[in-house]
Length: 286
Ligand code: SIN
Image (cartoon, rainbow, N blue to C red; front, side, top):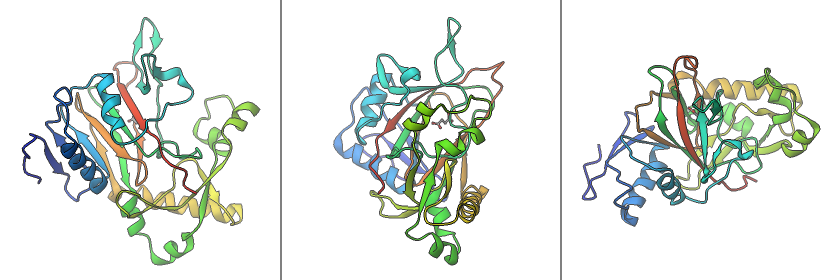
């Protein structure tokens, strides 16, 4: 456990080192560059941060995340806060009969922006209102998943790129929604990303597959699909997964470059879940 430093912030890695709790961050007081660097290092070392009991206005949320890199604005913009478009609202909360955020966002293992040319580097989700039970978020460690791959499988995917296809997978993941229009398809073309990415901050390789990965460039579609399914089943085994049960005023900042995450359900008729998310811009993968 990290001793409480002079700045009053305690960093407490989770058992096994996947994830680290951050206690005592006071954004209203301002955060020195040295403290910021200590927290950023913990983020790189532990892949995600769980800020406990964090008081944070939307403006502070935007300003704090921006210290980690440029922010991404979610498109379509329908669920972004009008006064802070960098904040994407998730959940079933309503005001005057109108939904405030996107319902059932993030169900299914993915990393943010994996189906875009530039996947997002990270995200920070803040619990504004949580249900009494359910609505947990699962996180999977893609460094550990890569390290645990049998050598033959590592060789097979070395230098390969996956095809991430919103077009092929839309109906698989969203059977209840209308099919994509031709304009939607033009706006969300297939993209290719390396199946193994080296994290720029930690230097470590991580497996990169998610729910939009369809098959593998340069392989017969069937062979590629089978390989993606094998990698996906491997990566989401319980041994790589942490379940975050939200407490009020928790914020979790995850690193999309070395993790997958997955929202889980709750009783939407009886309870409310309202979350604010900022999203960090990434860089092209190839
Ligand atoms: C997301 O995928 O960004 C949302 C996760 C959650 O709401 O638990």
